[in-house]
Amino acid sequence: MNFKNALLSTLIIEVGIALLAVINYGTSLEALQAVTRFSGRASLAIFSLIFLFHNHRHVKINAILSDKYLLVFAIAHAIHLAELLSYILLSGNDLIPIRLAGGFVAYAIIFLMPWFQYRVDTDRLSEKKFKTIKIVFMYYVWFIFFMTYLPRVRGELPHVGGSYKEFVILLAWVSTMMGIKITSMLNSRR
Image 1 (cartoon, rainbow, N blue to C red):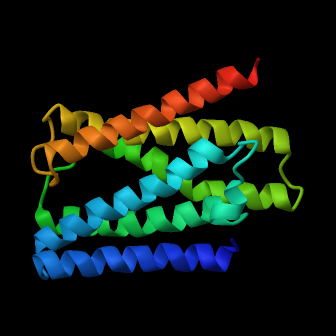
Image 2 (image 1 turned 180 degrees about the vertical axis):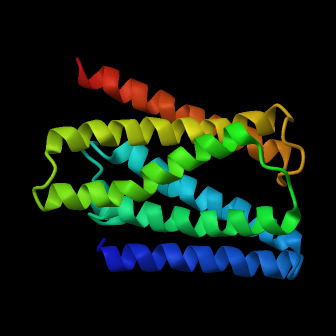
């Protein structure tokens, strides 16, 4: 897939999420919370593809999300961030400093990754350094997704919207991603 089509697909999904939220909840704070929640799920889906297939022998991430897959993810997550900040400001929910700090670092890395990719593409950053940066990016962002769902499953964030069943499924998926990654790494060493 080329970048234009990957971006268009991402934008169509985001608009679809917003339309479904308005249809189901009207133009309320609850609708914005739903948009934010499901936009995060869309970002998780894109990240899952990157995490699982960035160095896969048979599945080429470029064919799924374009050669600018990091930019596609950054754009999808920028949309989610705008929705999240809007919801937080309008809802009056308190910010949790440690979660805020961890999220800030994750967003910084996510938004810097397309720039690092550009620097590699223009021979201003070595492939070796980029590979190291990408490993840090992938495992840190995976950890943030894990820590997004763990406290929800434990009931520590009661006002985030969504159901317990949903949180268990998403935590199980994020955990399974790591299991797949570890299994893949162990199998490649044989």
